[in-house]
Length: 219
Image (cartoon, rainbow, N blue to C red):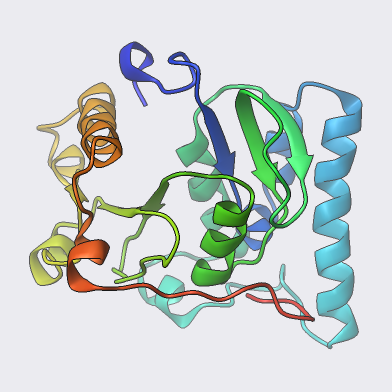
């Protein structure tokens, strides 16, 4: 997000989530934590998840767990994680909070939450998040019964095939006709309009998916 319109600079708070989405790149996020205590919490969240996965006889780092990601060209879970963490900018991480835990104050936070889309969004809503920006490459109609969910894609084929589900199309970045700052401004404008009352595509179509974190890991 460009600095001019960055919501952290405007006094807001940001929560990023899905613990499964940072496996293999957690050291990079840890280097951005504001204290050793916070980085330790991040590593502990990863360790808890991987310990549970190993108990079930699976291996998160042995390959990419999603057929869709493999079909999309990703080779490893680490490669996917590098893309995921790039979405949260460069600001320091203030703290690592538990699933559905209240967001304490202004700044950037990581929520230890499932990789399941709907469970993650529900946890963020329970923590006090007012609006979700959901990036998707292959496309999803995910909405929420509690908060507006803005769907953002940089895949021109996804947008053309699912325009009725996508709120923001920044695929022109890949064509070289839209730069990062311009894309950030486009997303920020959508955030502003939704905050002012504009309905998201999910709200218009009546997508109100809701699910909470279950006992056991969710990929």
